Length: 337
Ligand SMILES: Nc1ncnc2c1ncn2[C@@H]1O[C@H](COP(=O)(O)OP(=O)(O)OP(=O)(O)O)[C@@H](O)[C@H]1O
Ligand SMILES: [Mg+2]
Image (tube, rainbow, N blue to C red; front, side, top):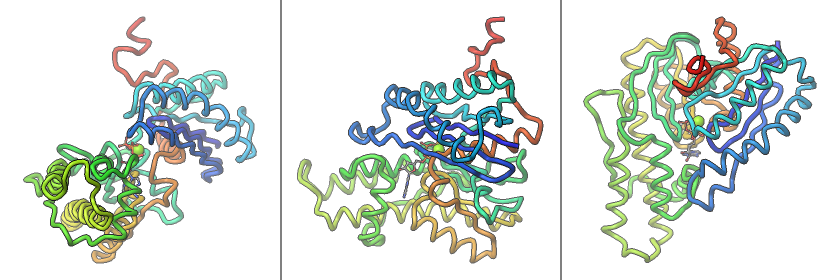
């Protein structure tokens, strides 16, 4: 059984192949040119996906020692994401599936992240807690099986990754902010500035907009506009901000570990690449004698391996999508029937 996965929801084009349960290719092309705009430009992103998706497919097949006709199932990200960007991968995947007359599986991008721990040698055991921390989402989930996911908490405002990106912008560190903040934070004192960590009534929910504003106020109060913040202080602000985000994530995860009888904890999504967060959650899991599964870096950010894997599980559960599948209600073929 050979499964092709395609991901194009934001600024990574990725093509992966899972052949007889083994990942044989996971090629990722990142659109670094958005850096100069301070964020992802949707139209440019769509065009770049269009240019690279066919070469990536060719390379992925070659790496897997397969021909296109050997592919049995085609899975692609169907949302959430940038509409134009999504349409490139999704339409391409449907076209390939149609031409081969093979099943097509539409995959939810976040479900891809949720199960990305299964790409590791050591896999999560059901039921497990998944902490999804990405550019657009911050979710705490109880994952009971490949088809049952219970939402325990979510962010009520910004996602953690979004907060990393916005604070990096305030500090003049550029986009994407996460890796820059991590680098600066490693040189600073996380206890130098006490930034607030919101604790909500819904005990598994998160809020990061207050923290983001607190960083802004700190900068406005202490530094004159247009004057560069001293390097040392950039390190301390980055470290203290990162510390506050980690505390919030850790606190809610600990509450859930205490209240749910789970076997494993899995940290996933782009922000799961953060070293200090990985260390903190590993420590937390060890404290409660839980297995901790954190994907290696290539499976934290957007990648097609997680889409192919999720697609394979949906296909095994008998879930496929028609060639007329549309992620945009009202625009499906049914609408025009
Ligand atoms: N080392 C790091 N530390 C903190 N954040 C990081 C790190 N590396 C990447 N990030 C953050 O991860 C986010 C990107 O993750 P991902 O690609 O999963 O998000 P997305 O696909 O845009 O959003 P979503 O998955 O919610 O649709 C960005 O906000 C980025 O700043
Ligand atoms: Mg993502």
